Image (cartoon, rainbow, N blue to C red):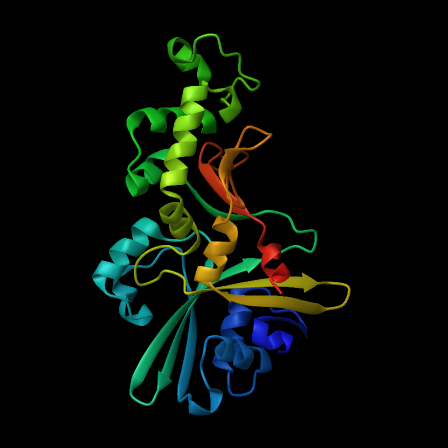
Length: 277
């Protein structure tokens, strides 16, 4: 079985952004990479009548719903569960059958750095996953949305390493265990929400690209989103040595920096998808 069948290879030129990838799909009759991507998705090129790719913005106006072929219900779910990363919607027509595929796009660095998957306020995640007020407060102490100074009665004799926030390993053992237990119990839901999303615009596939400036080539891997979730969700939920949280191969930490430094951030290393073969 060659590497293309496994969903990964290297091609000449650069196409590591969503606009270029859309163009490649829209030029599917001549473009070699887009034909390989469509084949990986399970389509036979000679049976396709029509392929149209459009970039999905992070904000969609209601008057543009028809353009993206989504219902009002899908729109409401998209607004609530929208992904922060780039996404492409592909409409494929075979005879009278219209198929739709949603791709989540990630750019990887050659040094295998982390890439943000999702970031939101603690309240947003509480609305999605329904954890209790106590857990919400401790997570806000973790992100710095609530400062340790404002909760001296609650944190007691804890002396924070950073006056702006608490690390998870500084919290009482009972609270650490509560956080671990919650994310362990809800790991499938959490991993699905941050990698796949929900509703009609949830991702079916993840396409990771890695541009080599010296060689002027782009390595890519295209994987079914369920394979992606299994890979990065594999492993225990535990406190990291730095006082953040590991959910399998996913890191949960305080966003920091600007803007929105007190949001909760989920990160992963997309380069690990290249190692699946």
